[in-house]
Length: 194
Length: 209
Image 1 (cartoon, one colour):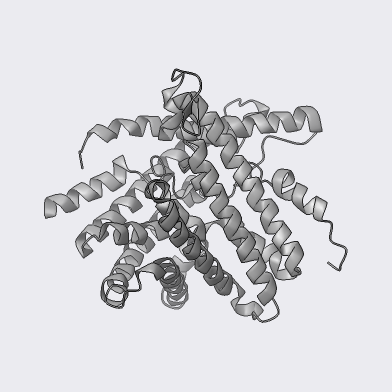
Image 2 (cartoon, chains in turn purple, blue):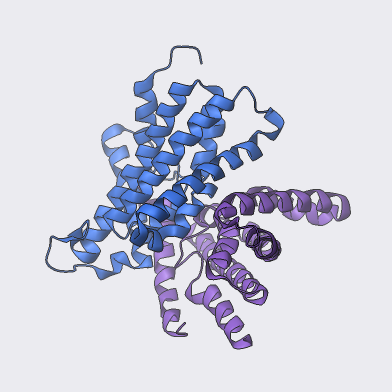
């Protein structure tokens, strides 16, 4: 069983990396990677929210939605749970740890309707993962996403100095770059056969 | 906004001026994810088209009843409801396509473009303009996906809508994940170039995010 959990973890972090092979979270990916500092802040917040969100949604899915045959409402319920949780985290952090709030608070507000936060519980529900497997998927995806953000941020800092054709400045060149990194990540695909 | 609503400019705005994918650079995930073939891109575009019209219509009808303080959560639930409808219909009638892109259909709920049109347009306008705006934005999205799909499928598989055309596979890489990013980057750069060359736009350096 632990072997399977480890497989899911590695697969979700590297082989099925959210950005490079599942194409999720691209808005955030291109939005925050202009600066290293914001990328790191975003990575922490995302990984934490993904883990807790996946756990909450797993419990609700397994103990409320399946017994009452509410599976078809999963989109509505998951987005409600994530939004409520993020709002609560926002309020609690403001009261308890103001210092941390001023560092990460702005990212929390951006997270509510983000596709990767929502994708983790949806995949878990689809695959009928156990709690540990769900956690492995959430942690792996979070770390994979952090890795992608940090790689991209470090390249984009160098890109500032490059002479890019005018039509390609900004987003277009970032897309081409992401394609190149994705090509490198393709090399991981032979690592594990699921 | 009184009765003087210019439908022509709304439509033009949705398809060209503020094309969700190429101009606003919103909702990029599915634009890259499902466009390895024209057919998938088209069906995804139709799903978004439908959701945008229905969400805009619902928000516009309910705009007098929704308290401004809770408007964002309300919009989210309206969107989630219509996405669920689309999801179930797709699952019932397009089984094989749904298997490939079911996750992305469900994730329409997190599209910034749907929420932003509800917030910026539908909540301030009457029913008909809201529907037209949703249709124009949805159409802009659909066209962008089909364009990307044609580009990628033709180069990657040498076919269109599953029918073999070129008889060879010139650039297999275009249907791999990598190709999606390349196609998107090239397409955006190309449109920026056209915009600067022929329409005197500022093209390039754009894309706030």
